[in-house]
Image (tube, rainbow over all chains, first blue to last red; front, side):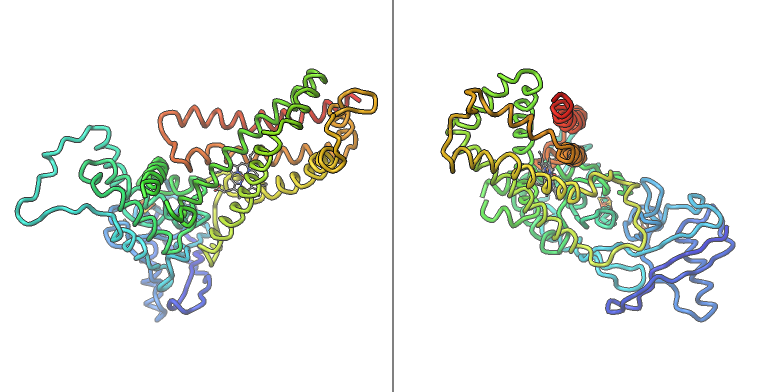
Length: 248
Length: 224
Ligand code: HEM
Ligand code: SF4
Ligand code: FES
């Protein structure tokens, strides 16, 4: 396959940045999107140019490190996959492909396609955990009965890998799908209920302070989420938040 | 509880409450208007009741005005906040791949509704206030001794331009509600086993009510 890539290049956080065209040839349909970028970077290095910086780690769809806004969609045109699991067979010979970083004021660009998603870490630090005694008498989680439906729903929420595609896809750069998933994961389980009030208040407060936008229920996040996290999680977070806020 | 309007979810909640209130009001307004194409007497009686009942005039009317103002001011505030949450736009963004046009353009459908509402106020509300509270005529009667409401309504729908604008306003309201109805329920945290049914009901509400208003306007325009 021969393609034209239009890639966002930006030296560092202070650089203005711009889209740059790169023709590329000899791409196999079975290559992953990141392998295609590896081919491009090898060619750039051989020519003595600066390779394109992009995020990745596991390359098997589980870590949430890869990103990219490809042809106007987070993680590209395929559904239920991260960019590392996107394959070139989704494209046609001769295509022009736009490759941009995830855009949000809360996700500043570090370089080229790499953005700083530590806002998510700070939201997690604000409440995305449970406090347990680890001094030798830790209670086995399995000792507390949990009904099957709640366990399954909590597990579905827990599959969120924190990639940020929801924020990138949202016209408001809202982080509510991510935070909704993290709040739900704990709110549904007995271990999480103990700290539920503080958790939701603190996580939402941190989310707002990071400068994410307000959800307007367009549902774009749910469609683009590689893990199929459902909007129900946002509704649950809204309920948890209102319950907590009216409690005082 | 304090400062709930300072949080993103609190603002969403307030927005949804104002929207739910407006949707209930709209239904009531529709029922009264609809009566005008069934029976002029029924319309006159209901209009006179609504226009002179003190509970409606001095409690519900201010609440409604506050509700509308709150809704569109909050709508603008949210829009500005949300726009500033992404300073650099995408060179290519395929919004149609993951969301409806209605959901992405609430501010534009809303803006058009606002323009319509301003004209609607000038057309109907200000003359009412003038007759009742400035000229002090609470009788609701024409010099002929009949109720004036039906006559005034029919008269208003004679000019073509007003009917056209009226219809256009309701097309935008339909677009607004096609996303807005379900969105309001999601905002207050209602997403459960009834969601599917509610979605269907919402689509029906969003089409039937505005279409009904359009039909009422057309009937009066072409019948006289
Ligand atoms: C006066 C002009 C109006 C403006 C400028 C306006 C603006 C907006 C905006 C910008 C939103 C999006 C906010 C969001 O989705 O979170 C919205 C939502 C909504 N609007 Fe309006 N609107 C207007 C009138 C109306 C009217 C007359 C109705 C109903 C009779 C209505 C019903 C709704 C509903 C149901 C929502 C969804 C609320 C939610 O998502 O929680 N709007 N409006
Ligand atoms: S909710 Fe989905 S899109 Fe958002 S961070 Fe989690 S996995 Fe990624
Ligand atoms: S690199 Fe780990 S999910 Fe893509």
